[in-house]
Length: 65
Image (cartoon, rainbow, N blue to C red; front, side, top):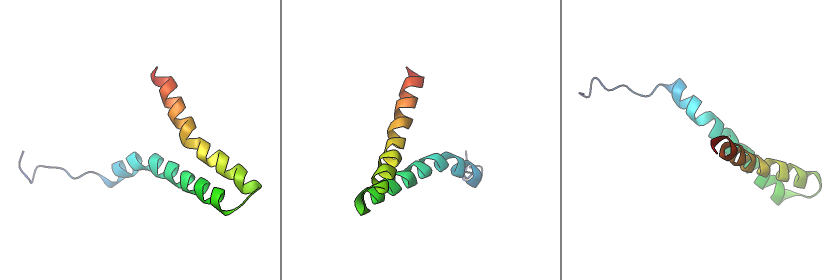
């Protein structure tokens, strides 16, 4: 395959691939920041936000097994 025949990745395809990991990263950052900046409701927000990646992994693990 020559250089002119190679296809570049489509931007929509890249966005679809990285949309969920970017959203999980954003939720994780929100959870970490809320845990560091306050008490009370912010602690609840941090627990919920930091549980999201764990729940995603558990769900994937259960679906696979």
